Amino acid sequence: MSADTSNSVASQGRSPGDPVPGDLAMTRTLWPLLLASAVGLLPFSVFSTYLVPIADETGRDVATVGGLRGLGGVAALAVGMALAPLIDRVPRARAAAAGLGLLGVAAALGASGGFLLVATFCLLTGAATAVLNPALAAAAADRFGDGRAAGRAATLVSATTSMTAMLAAPLIALPAMLWGWQGDLVAVAGLSVLLAGALLVRGRTDGSVGSTAGAEERRPGYFASFRMLAAVPGAVPLLLVSVLRTSVFMGYLAYLAAYYDDRFDLHPEVFSLVWTLSGASFFVSNLLTGRVTNAEHSRVATERLLAVGVAVALVSAVGFWFTHWLPLALVLTSLHAAAHAVVAACAVSLLVRRCGPLRGTALSLNSAGQSLGVFAGAALGGAGLAVAGYPGIAVAFGALLAVALGAAWLVLRHGHGEDDHESEDEA
Image 1 (cartoon, rainbow, N blue to C red):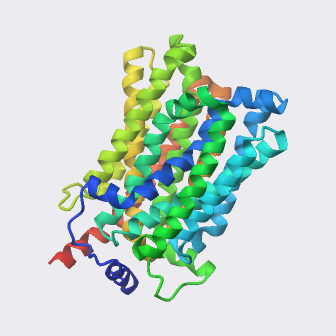
Image 2 (cartoon, rainbow, N blue to C red; image 1 turned 90 degrees about the horizontal axis):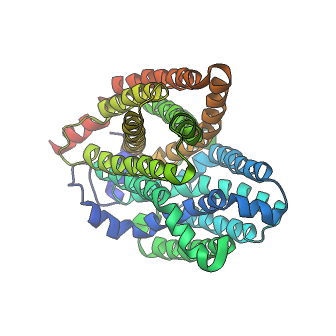
């Protein structure tokens, strides 16, 4: 273990061999961060849910307004890449509060309903989440040092996000019955500002939540951070796995409704149950994977589980598009979502546990790569569909996951790293 990593652990009063706290204990400690991660998902959920009335309010067609969502992805990619090393150079609480503040401004502008302001809302929301998401995950991990507890804390943040995605429709639709979609965005703006203040106060009173891992240590330069991260065993293949699996999953989701409608004649009202099945499968799998892989005496090697998850995603991604029996399609839908959740949780756990003082940089690049994956997956899936129909989608996504499986094997080759160090420390 590096000196920086050891000092980072010591600064939190924990060592890699300490027992991993239970989920409830972690939740009591991390609740402001978990709540902030949930709020961060709401603006674009409102935008997607109420796209038609938002388009009517702006006086533009649905396709034009819907395309503005892409501005958020471009902003998230650009900001995430540009600011990645800086996430490790400022206190986490300040970075998260800045992201929440920008999110609040974005939501307030979006509530106006003007076309240019809605476009600005999309840009600012993408930029805000590019800062907010990695800062929250890194802050949660910092609170529990550098061992398995840190990985579990970070995966709790991602599990909360996936739970929010699953419950977003009722969370948004029920209040909107009272005050409309504009009221939803105003509420998000208010929550964002309140949480930003809470994180700043908590950061001053509890240094572990607001600190930067290894803040007292020598801070590398901007470009040196990228070079140091590239030198971490398995870090680059891990980021590649994350980008590729996001591309496949988001591309798959982009065409899921059309597939069920075309092949099984499922209308939107019925298809919403399929969407719930997929979301629930992802959430449960993500939550359990984070718990199992970061358990104190886990018998499951995180690197092996990562590779298994990619392999299952590959089989289910290809097989799904050739299915003509609805029960099997539903099983594959659930299995595919669960496999992606396994890969996502393993990737976050390994990045947190391996990258130590560079975890903020790694998580920021991971988030930016996922933004890239959203565009790449939809575009590649669309190209496959145009060329060869559903078999074309299967080939396109299968090829991406085959490359991801190769990257997962590289991660497995470097798997002697952090778990062995933990065993040595315990000894």
